[in-house]
Image (cartoon, rainbow, N blue to C red; front, side, top):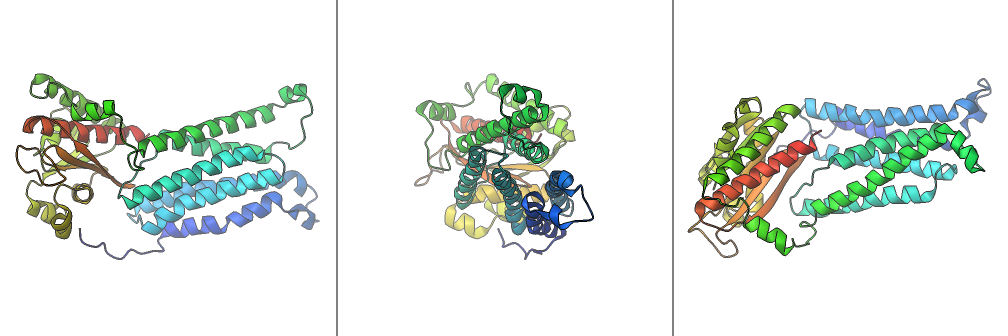
Length: 390
Protein backbone atom coordinates (compact mmCIF):
# COMPACT_ATOMS: atom_id res chain seq x y z
CA UNK A 1 0.00 0.00 0.00
CA UNK A 2 1.26 3.44 -0.80
CA UNK A 3 2.74 5.40 2.02
CA UNK A 4 0.11 7.46 3.81
CA UNK A 5 0.03 11.20 3.45
CA UNK A 6 1.64 13.24 6.21
CA UNK A 7 -0.75 13.57 9.09
CA UNK A 8 -1.57 16.82 10.81
CA UNK A 9 -0.14 16.15 14.24
CA UNK A 10 -1.83 18.77 16.39
CA UNK A 11 -5.44 18.10 15.57
CA UNK A 12 -8.13 19.40 17.94
CA UNK A 13 -8.43 15.90 19.43
CA UNK A 14 -4.70 15.67 20.09
CA UNK A 15 -4.66 19.15 21.62
CA UNK A 16 -7.42 18.11 24.05
CA UNK A 17 -5.46 14.97 24.95
CA UNK A 18 -2.25 16.95 25.50
CA UNK A 19 -4.10 19.42 27.73
CA UNK A 20 -5.46 16.49 29.76
CA UNK A 21 -1.93 15.25 30.39
CA UNK A 22 -0.63 18.72 31.25
CA UNK A 23 -3.45 19.27 33.76
CA UNK A 24 -2.82 16.05 35.71
CA UNK A 25 -0.34 17.87 38.02
CA UNK A 26 -3.23 20.23 38.85
CA UNK A 27 -5.18 17.23 40.14
CA UNK A 28 -2.18 16.07 42.19
CA UNK A 29 -1.88 19.54 43.74
CA UNK A 30 -5.62 19.62 44.45
CA UNK A 31 -5.64 16.28 46.27
CA UNK A 32 -2.42 16.22 48.31
CA UNK A 33 -1.08 19.77 48.70
CA UNK A 34 -2.08 22.00 51.67
CA UNK A 35 -3.65 24.58 49.38
CA UNK A 36 -6.55 25.33 51.80
CA UNK A 37 -3.94 26.86 54.15
CA UNK A 38 -3.15 29.43 51.49
CA UNK A 39 -6.73 30.67 51.23
CA UNK A 40 -7.44 32.74 54.31
CA UNK A 41 -10.57 34.15 52.69
CA UNK A 42 -12.12 30.65 52.44
CA UNK A 43 -12.35 29.18 55.94
CA UNK A 44 -14.19 26.07 54.73
CA UNK A 45 -11.57 25.18 52.12
CA UNK A 46 -10.42 22.15 54.13
CA UNK A 47 -13.93 20.70 54.04
CA UNK A 48 -14.25 21.18 50.30
CA UNK A 49 -10.71 20.07 49.41
CA UNK A 50 -11.63 16.43 48.52
CA UNK A 51 -14.61 17.62 46.50
CA UNK A 52 -12.44 20.03 44.51
CA UNK A 53 -9.96 17.22 43.82
CA UNK A 54 -12.83 14.91 42.81
CA UNK A 55 -14.20 17.58 40.45
CA UNK A 56 -10.82 18.01 38.75
CA UNK A 57 -10.45 14.22 38.41
CA UNK A 58 -13.95 13.88 36.91
CA UNK A 59 -13.31 16.73 34.49
CA UNK A 60 -10.06 15.20 33.27
CA UNK A 61 -11.69 11.77 32.96
CA UNK A 62 -14.71 13.14 31.07
CA UNK A 63 -12.56 14.83 28.44
CA UNK A 64 -11.50 11.35 27.30
CA UNK A 65 -14.79 11.10 25.41
CA UNK A 66 -14.30 14.58 23.98
CA UNK A 67 -11.01 13.87 22.21
CA UNK A 68 -12.35 10.52 20.99
CA UNK A 69 -15.43 12.18 19.53
CA UNK A 70 -13.36 14.89 17.83
CA UNK A 71 -10.99 12.34 16.29
CA UNK A 72 -13.80 10.17 14.90
CA UNK A 73 -16.17 12.94 13.77
CA UNK A 74 -13.41 14.84 11.99
CA UNK A 75 -11.77 11.69 10.63
CA UNK A 76 -8.50 12.76 12.25
CA UNK A 77 -7.35 9.56 13.96
CA UNK A 78 -3.55 9.93 14.12
CA UNK A 79 -0.70 7.78 15.36
CA UNK A 80 0.11 10.44 17.96
CA UNK A 81 -3.48 10.33 19.20
CA UNK A 82 -3.43 6.54 19.45
CA UNK A 83 -0.31 6.88 21.60
CA UNK A 84 -1.34 9.80 23.81
CA UNK A 85 -4.98 8.95 24.53
CA UNK A 86 -4.43 5.70 26.47
CA UNK A 87 -1.29 7.23 28.01
CA UNK A 88 -3.33 10.10 29.46
CA UNK A 89 -5.76 7.68 31.11
CA UNK A 90 -2.96 5.58 32.58
CA UNK A 91 -1.09 8.59 33.97
CA UNK A 92 -4.27 10.02 35.51
CA UNK A 93 -5.28 6.73 37.17
CA UNK A 94 -1.73 6.07 38.39
CA UNK A 95 -1.45 9.58 39.83
CA UNK A 96 -4.76 9.17 41.66
CA UNK A 97 -3.84 5.77 43.09
CA UNK A 98 -0.44 6.95 44.31
CA UNK A 99 -2.01 10.05 45.86
CA UNK A 100 -4.58 7.95 47.70
CA UNK A 101 -1.79 5.70 49.01
CA UNK A 102 0.18 8.73 50.22
CA UNK A 103 -2.95 9.98 52.00
CA UNK A 104 -3.41 6.59 53.68
CA UNK A 105 -6.82 6.07 52.08
CA UNK A 106 -5.86 3.11 49.89
CA UNK A 107 -3.61 0.08 50.51
CA UNK A 108 -0.74 -0.26 48.07
CA UNK A 109 -1.73 -3.74 46.87
CA UNK A 110 -4.74 -2.30 45.01
CA UNK A 111 -2.53 0.06 43.03
CA UNK A 112 -0.03 -2.75 42.44
CA UNK A 113 -2.69 -4.96 40.83
CA UNK A 114 -4.03 -2.17 38.61
CA UNK A 115 -0.63 -0.84 37.51
CA UNK A 116 0.76 -4.34 36.91
CA UNK A 117 -2.17 -5.07 34.61
CA UNK A 118 -1.36 -1.95 32.57
CA UNK A 119 2.30 -2.95 32.22
CA UNK A 120 1.34 -6.45 31.04
CA UNK A 121 -1.28 -5.28 28.56
CA UNK A 122 1.00 -2.55 27.20
CA UNK A 123 3.74 -5.13 26.70
CA UNK A 124 1.39 -7.45 24.84
CA UNK A 125 0.28 -4.59 22.61
CA UNK A 126 3.89 -3.80 21.76
CA UNK A 127 4.52 -7.41 20.74
CA UNK A 128 1.29 -7.50 18.72
CA UNK A 129 2.19 -4.25 16.96
CA UNK A 130 5.50 -5.70 15.77
CA UNK A 131 3.48 -8.47 14.08
CA UNK A 132 0.94 -6.11 12.54
CA UNK A 133 -1.85 -7.31 14.83
CA UNK A 134 -4.33 -5.31 16.87
CA UNK A 135 -6.07 -7.00 19.78
CA UNK A 136 -9.42 -5.39 20.41
CA UNK A 137 -10.41 -4.56 23.96
CA UNK A 138 -13.29 -6.58 25.39
CA UNK A 139 -16.15 -5.40 27.56
CA UNK A 140 -14.06 -6.43 30.58
CA UNK A 141 -11.62 -3.63 29.84
CA UNK A 142 -14.34 -1.05 29.28
CA UNK A 143 -16.18 -2.02 32.47
CA UNK A 144 -12.87 -2.04 34.34
CA UNK A 145 -12.18 1.54 33.34
CA UNK A 146 -15.62 2.74 34.43
CA UNK A 147 -15.43 1.02 37.83
CA UNK A 148 -11.88 2.24 38.41
CA UNK A 149 -12.88 5.85 37.78
CA UNK A 150 -15.96 5.62 40.00
CA UNK A 151 -14.01 3.89 42.78
CA UNK A 152 -11.27 6.53 42.72
CA UNK A 153 -13.82 9.33 42.99
CA UNK A 154 -15.47 7.58 45.95
CA UNK A 155 -12.14 7.09 47.71
CA UNK A 156 -11.30 10.77 47.20
CA UNK A 157 -14.50 12.04 48.81
CA UNK A 158 -15.11 9.43 51.50
CA UNK A 159 -14.04 10.17 55.03
CA UNK A 160 -10.48 9.05 55.67
CA UNK A 161 -10.95 8.43 59.39
CA UNK A 162 -9.61 5.13 60.73
CA UNK A 163 -12.36 2.60 61.28
CA UNK A 164 -11.43 0.91 64.56
CA UNK A 165 -14.16 -1.69 64.98
CA UNK A 166 -16.16 -3.96 62.73
CA UNK A 167 -19.29 -2.27 64.04
CA UNK A 168 -18.01 1.08 62.79
CA UNK A 169 -17.41 -0.42 59.37
CA UNK A 170 -20.97 -1.69 59.13
CA UNK A 171 -22.34 1.72 60.03
CA UNK A 172 -20.18 3.57 57.51
CA UNK A 173 -22.22 3.15 54.33
CA UNK A 174 -19.92 5.22 52.13
CA UNK A 175 -16.90 3.24 53.33
CA UNK A 176 -18.57 -0.06 52.43
CA UNK A 177 -19.87 1.21 49.10
CA UNK A 178 -16.46 2.63 48.12
CA UNK A 179 -14.73 -0.65 48.86
CA UNK A 180 -17.42 -2.65 47.04
CA UNK A 181 -16.87 -0.62 43.87
CA UNK A 182 -13.09 -0.84 44.26
CA UNK A 183 -13.31 -4.61 44.74
CA UNK A 184 -15.33 -4.94 41.52
CA UNK A 185 -12.77 -2.75 39.74
CA UNK A 186 -9.89 -4.97 40.92
CA UNK A 187 -11.71 -8.15 39.83
CA UNK A 188 -12.48 -6.67 36.39
CA UNK A 189 -8.86 -5.54 36.14
CA UNK A 190 -7.66 -9.12 36.63
CA UNK A 191 -10.30 -10.59 34.31
CA UNK A 192 -9.51 -8.10 31.54
CA UNK A 193 -5.81 -8.92 31.84
CA UNK A 194 -6.49 -12.66 31.58
CA UNK A 195 -8.88 -12.11 28.66
CA UNK A 196 -6.30 -10.00 26.85
CA UNK A 197 -3.60 -12.60 27.44
CA UNK A 198 -5.79 -15.41 26.09
CA UNK A 199 -6.57 -13.40 22.94
CA UNK A 200 -2.87 -12.77 22.42
CA UNK A 201 -1.57 -16.26 23.13
CA UNK A 202 -0.79 -16.95 19.48
CA UNK A 203 0.89 -13.54 19.14
CA UNK A 204 3.06 -14.40 22.13
CA UNK A 205 4.07 -17.69 20.57
CA UNK A 206 1.85 -20.14 22.43
CA UNK A 207 0.57 -22.92 20.24
CA UNK A 208 -3.02 -24.04 20.16
CA UNK A 209 -3.75 -27.43 21.70
CA UNK A 210 -4.06 -30.46 19.51
CA UNK A 211 -7.81 -30.45 19.99
CA UNK A 212 -7.99 -26.79 18.93
CA UNK A 213 -5.85 -27.48 15.88
CA UNK A 214 -8.15 -30.31 14.93
CA UNK A 215 -11.17 -28.06 15.31
CA UNK A 216 -9.52 -25.48 13.08
CA UNK A 217 -8.62 -28.05 10.47
CA UNK A 218 -12.04 -29.70 10.49
CA UNK A 219 -14.21 -26.64 10.98
CA UNK A 220 -17.59 -26.64 9.29
CA UNK A 221 -18.26 -30.40 9.36
CA UNK A 222 -20.03 -31.95 6.41
CA UNK A 223 -18.61 -29.10 4.36
CA UNK A 224 -19.76 -30.60 1.07
CA UNK A 225 -23.39 -31.11 1.97
CA UNK A 226 -26.31 -28.87 2.79
CA UNK A 227 -25.46 -28.87 6.48
CA UNK A 228 -22.48 -26.62 5.78
CA UNK A 229 -24.74 -24.15 4.00
CA UNK A 230 -26.97 -24.10 7.07
CA UNK A 231 -23.95 -23.31 9.25
CA UNK A 232 -22.99 -20.37 7.02
CA UNK A 233 -26.56 -19.07 6.97
CA UNK A 234 -26.87 -19.31 10.75
CA UNK A 235 -23.61 -17.42 11.26
CA UNK A 236 -24.60 -14.81 8.68
CA UNK A 237 -28.02 -14.35 10.29
CA UNK A 238 -26.42 -13.86 13.71
CA UNK A 239 -23.96 -11.36 12.22
CA UNK A 240 -26.70 -9.34 10.52
CA UNK A 241 -28.73 -9.27 13.72
CA UNK A 242 -25.81 -8.06 15.83
CA UNK A 243 -24.58 -5.52 13.29
CA UNK A 244 -28.08 -4.08 12.84
CA UNK A 245 -28.68 -3.83 16.60
CA UNK A 246 -25.35 -2.05 17.12
CA UNK A 247 -25.74 0.20 14.09
CA UNK A 248 -22.49 -0.85 12.40
CA UNK A 249 -21.84 -1.38 8.70
CA UNK A 250 -19.90 -4.21 7.08
CA UNK A 251 -17.79 -4.76 3.99
CA UNK A 252 -15.69 -7.56 2.52
CA UNK A 253 -12.61 -7.98 0.35
CA UNK A 254 -12.39 -11.54 -0.94
CA UNK A 255 -9.90 -13.47 -2.97
CA UNK A 256 -10.04 -17.26 -2.58
CA UNK A 257 -13.69 -17.23 -1.41
CA UNK A 258 -14.78 -15.40 -4.55
CA UNK A 259 -17.62 -13.53 -2.87
CA UNK A 260 -18.87 -16.37 -0.67
CA UNK A 261 -18.67 -14.24 2.48
CA UNK A 262 -20.74 -11.40 1.04
CA UNK A 263 -23.14 -13.88 -0.56
CA UNK A 264 -23.75 -15.49 2.84
CA UNK A 265 -24.43 -12.13 4.45
CA UNK A 266 -26.72 -10.84 1.72
CA UNK A 267 -28.68 -14.11 1.78
CA UNK A 268 -30.14 -12.89 5.08
CA UNK A 269 -33.28 -10.78 4.82
CA UNK A 270 -32.63 -7.27 6.11
CA UNK A 271 -28.88 -7.38 5.47
CA UNK A 272 -29.15 -4.11 3.54
CA UNK A 273 -29.32 -2.38 6.93
CA UNK A 274 -25.68 -3.23 7.63
CA UNK A 275 -23.98 -4.54 4.47
CA UNK A 276 -22.17 -1.85 2.48
CA UNK A 277 -20.67 -3.96 -0.27
CA UNK A 278 -17.96 -6.35 -1.37
CA UNK A 279 -14.87 -6.33 -3.55
CA UNK A 280 -13.87 -9.67 -5.09
CA UNK A 281 -10.15 -9.10 -5.67
CA UNK A 282 -9.32 -12.48 -7.19
CA UNK A 283 -6.61 -11.01 -9.40
CA UNK A 284 -3.61 -9.23 -7.91
CA UNK A 285 -4.20 -6.21 -10.16
CA UNK A 286 -7.58 -5.74 -8.48
CA UNK A 287 -5.94 -6.00 -5.06
CA UNK A 288 -3.53 -3.18 -5.96
CA UNK A 289 -5.89 -1.11 -8.11
CA UNK A 290 -9.15 -1.29 -6.15
CA UNK A 291 -7.97 -1.99 -2.60
CA UNK A 292 -4.66 -0.14 -2.55
CA UNK A 293 -2.54 -3.17 -1.70
CA UNK A 294 1.13 -2.37 -2.21
CA UNK A 295 2.45 -4.20 -5.28
CA UNK A 296 5.79 -4.62 -3.52
CA UNK A 297 4.06 -6.42 -0.66
CA UNK A 298 2.58 -8.93 -3.09
CA UNK A 299 5.92 -9.29 -4.87
CA UNK A 300 7.95 -9.90 -1.71
CA UNK A 301 5.49 -11.60 0.64
CA UNK A 302 2.93 -13.00 -1.77
CA UNK A 303 -0.79 -12.53 -2.23
CA UNK A 304 -1.37 -15.03 0.59
CA UNK A 305 0.29 -13.22 3.50
CA UNK A 306 -0.46 -11.25 6.64
CA UNK A 307 0.37 -7.85 5.17
CA UNK A 308 -1.66 -8.44 2.03
CA UNK A 309 -4.69 -9.46 4.08
CA UNK A 310 -4.28 -6.43 6.37
CA UNK A 311 -4.04 -4.04 3.43
CA UNK A 312 -7.02 -5.67 1.71
CA UNK A 313 -9.18 -5.19 4.81
CA UNK A 314 -8.04 -1.59 5.32
CA UNK A 315 -8.61 -0.80 1.65
CA UNK A 316 -12.09 -2.34 1.64
CA UNK A 317 -13.09 -0.39 4.75
CA UNK A 318 -11.95 2.86 3.15
CA UNK A 319 -13.46 2.24 -0.28
CA UNK A 320 -16.77 0.90 1.02
CA UNK A 321 -17.07 3.29 3.96
CA UNK A 322 -17.77 0.43 6.37
CA UNK A 323 -17.25 0.34 10.13
CA UNK A 324 -15.83 -3.18 9.86
CA UNK A 325 -14.28 -4.78 6.79
CA UNK A 326 -13.04 -8.35 6.58
CA UNK A 327 -10.61 -9.73 4.02
CA UNK A 328 -9.62 -13.22 3.01
CA UNK A 329 -6.80 -14.49 0.81
CA UNK A 330 -5.60 -18.06 0.59
CA UNK A 331 -4.80 -21.20 -1.36
CA UNK A 332 -7.96 -23.24 -1.83
CA UNK A 333 -6.36 -25.85 -4.07
CA UNK A 334 -5.97 -28.28 -5.56
CA UNK A 335 -2.97 -26.42 -6.99
CA UNK A 336 -1.24 -23.20 -6.03
CA UNK A 337 0.81 -24.46 -3.09
CA UNK A 338 4.27 -22.94 -2.63
CA UNK A 339 7.05 -23.58 -0.14
CA UNK A 340 5.81 -22.77 3.34
CA UNK A 341 2.25 -22.25 2.12
CA UNK A 342 0.48 -25.56 1.50
CA UNK A 343 -3.01 -25.92 0.12
CA UNK A 344 -5.45 -24.77 2.81
CA UNK A 345 -3.31 -21.82 3.95
CA UNK A 346 -5.66 -18.87 4.44
CA UNK A 347 -5.18 -15.40 5.92
CA UNK A 348 -8.20 -13.47 7.17
CA UNK A 349 -8.05 -9.90 8.46
CA UNK A 350 -10.38 -7.38 10.06
CA UNK A 351 -10.12 -3.59 9.80
CA UNK A 352 -11.91 -1.11 12.05
CA UNK A 353 -11.44 2.42 13.32
CA UNK A 354 -9.10 1.00 15.99
CA UNK A 355 -6.76 -0.64 13.50
CA UNK A 356 -6.47 -4.03 11.83
CA UNK A 357 -5.61 -7.58 12.85
CA UNK A 358 -4.92 -10.72 10.82
CA UNK A 359 -4.99 -14.45 11.51
CA UNK A 360 -3.50 -17.42 9.69
CA UNK A 361 -5.45 -20.66 9.23
CA UNK A 362 -4.58 -24.05 7.75
CA UNK A 363 -7.73 -25.77 6.60
CA UNK A 364 -8.11 -29.35 5.42
CA UNK A 365 -10.32 -30.71 2.66
CA UNK A 366 -11.01 -30.13 -1.00
CA UNK A 367 -11.30 -26.73 -2.69
CA UNK A 368 -14.93 -26.10 -1.77
CA UNK A 369 -14.38 -27.23 1.81
CA UNK A 370 -11.46 -24.82 2.27
CA UNK A 371 -13.49 -21.94 0.82
CA UNK A 372 -16.42 -22.66 3.14
CA UNK A 373 -14.16 -22.89 6.18
CA UNK A 374 -12.51 -19.59 5.21
CA UNK A 375 -15.97 -18.02 4.90
CA UNK A 376 -16.88 -19.30 8.37
CA UNK A 377 -13.72 -17.73 9.77
CA UNK A 378 -14.58 -14.37 8.22
CA UNK A 379 -18.11 -14.46 9.60
CA UNK A 380 -16.78 -15.43 13.05
CA UNK A 381 -14.33 -12.52 12.95
CA UNK A 382 -17.09 -10.04 12.15
CA UNK A 383 -19.36 -11.53 14.83
CA UNK A 384 -16.61 -11.17 17.45
CA UNK A 385 -16.05 -7.56 16.40
CA UNK A 386 -19.76 -6.75 16.70
CA UNK A 387 -19.96 -8.56 20.03
CA UNK A 388 -17.23 -6.32 21.47
CA UNK A 389 -18.99 -3.16 20.30
CA UNK A 390 -21.37 -2.61 23.21
